[in-house]
Image (cartoon, rainbow, N blue to C red; front, side, top):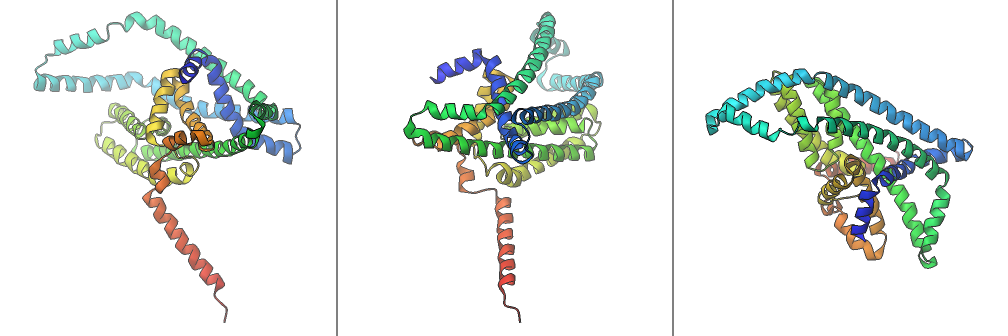
Length: 365
């Protein structure tokens, strides 16, 4: 069944990917929709339409800001190329001195490795056009699916309950309710943590004076979702770009120190408090899920991997026969305790609360 499900996802990804993003987006937008309908007395359909349009406008705004930074980066590619050529010549000379490979031999090896690039240029342009068209298709379908899921959410809930036996009705209802609440908190926590890391990264890079600071800061924050590997990939990419745009090698050292400090604070303070308290997933399952998602669905699979694993863990933890799988997905270290700094902060807060209680209960003279 797992093999068949994997094949279904691969061959039906044009259906699965928009639907998966729509389910996650509808779960995130559900509290806003309920607020408009229950508190402000909006009609159901207009309220859901307003929520979806607002979400699309917000996403478009974020994409516009980020794409502006990417455009600046792409416009300076010729300058980056010149710096890379200078560093490449230095590297060639070092290889020639240390390993006795002449410059012509190195050129032959590179030409052999890149011999098929020109022949695939037309195919690359066609693939780029197809990717842009596919992305627009996904955006349209996600908007439509999200709106319809919000409109028919009660019908979908009744269907999921009715599929199982009457004996399991209470258990299914609990799984649906708890999954909805925890996924909302988990996704909000993950987005909040990513936003904080992006702001810290960008601020540090701006202080250092790195070019494309906002682009590199946001890009590294997105990669930071992947435990252990994400911080390394973001650090390497940022260092390489800085190496081609800055004449000061000390900038690389400051980037390394700053990113490691931010990662330390994230692992010990932000992650345990914002995300770790919602759903605890160990690093092995996270990395494996990201690799499998990327292999099956490409870039969308990388972004969908973590929420999907979180939902699966929520379901596994609440079904007796699947609890071993939930334990396998869990983080034993986080289950035993949170980060050291966070525990110290919690201890300080507990002591201060006890002092306040003691002062408030002290009899007045």
